[in-house]
Length: 296
Ligand SMILES: [Zn+2]
Image 1 (cartoon, rainbow, N blue to C red):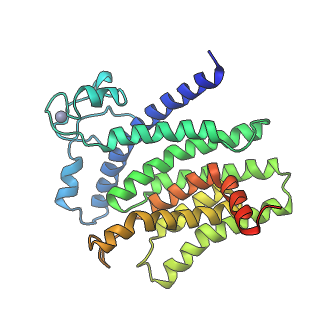
Image 2: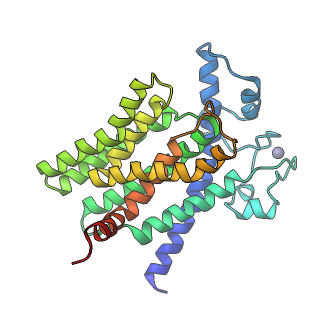
Image 3: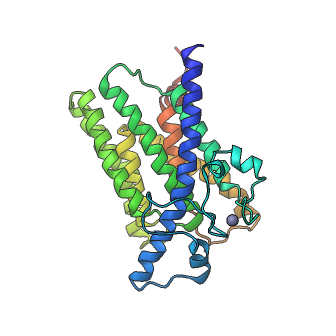
């Protein structure tokens, strides 16, 4: 069999499995977050506590997966990506409660992320730095998917995920800079990237007195800047985030579904901008140059 097909299938399967991992991590993170909030004396809403009361919260990794509704421990055959969900009709095998569509959507979404990354990765994998850069992109994608779902659900970007991602971003920056021989242009790229994606959000955060964006968005901007380490790609990511936001939310605003006070999570928009810019940014910029400057 052609290697490309084989690798594409492997990428798809890795995506399905990581999507399933993200789905479970999100709930465990939520359970731990609420338990920490409670310990710190913050008020935890009853409906929030009820959502995770069946989850053991000792550790994110160590405990087994359980049904959120009945608390039944799930077996390996309940956890097969897509297959389990489809064969059970989207319901728990034990209590028949609806599982919801987030889990299979995440699994399919991550499969698309992995396959698209493998097929459309814009750089040649010709050095160990280049391969490491690609590996960091994939791992970062798993972490960012967790933030994506968490922010959509609870309007929060938990530090437990953001901080390791900042570490990963710093590693990525080092790898890319080393690959570019620590040239001044490369270092300037890093600085400008951080200024546009994180600095701008920080400014809005300060000016709006924390009303328009949260500090989580400032930190997420930093993560994405350190992952892109390219000024033009960072500008494009920001533009795409706003474009996608307009496309998604404008119809809802027009129909009055979203009012001035409604909270719009920026995290998923920024992450979408990062994904498109990271894979297709160079092509989009080249295309933009041809239509504005004209072909010669
Ligand atoms: Zn159940």
